[in-house]
Length: 209
Image (cartoon, rainbow, N blue to C red):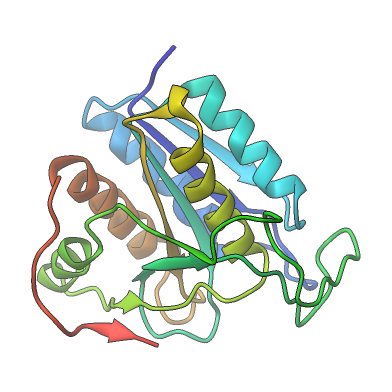
């Protein structure tokens, strides 16, 4: 059955007790349901390959109008919708299965990159109006977040049975920068903006490298 929104976050990794991305998703999902949206939320493993496989399975199962994958970027100072996913795995630390790929493609033979189709500048503008720090990010890194982002965009571009589904990726910062309640509220806002905004704002600036 087709639904409105598929949200994904990640399990804890690198010895942490929680992962802010999953906490944001867990909090945002019921808020979106209160707006009458049908929402599925999936916690992904921090594992190269397997996380993308599970996401692809969830997309095919639910056939949502919108997919927003969420990850943690602990060093950032705000919420950052991502512009582009790149076709490379280059792990600074092992994933939760112990894998440490270096300079490997996410999808062998795939394009160098895939751009988001979400209205990322409109999303950042909405954050600003609510007083929540945010910016457009030009890099999702080369760890499992980028792996999932690339797999999502590649799937939506390549599988004609999924035509019309829009997807993208958002990073949230550590809880000491933006607490879980605020991050959840902000994520719900971003999802509503993405659903309601078919064309992004045409303006420069507001970016994080």
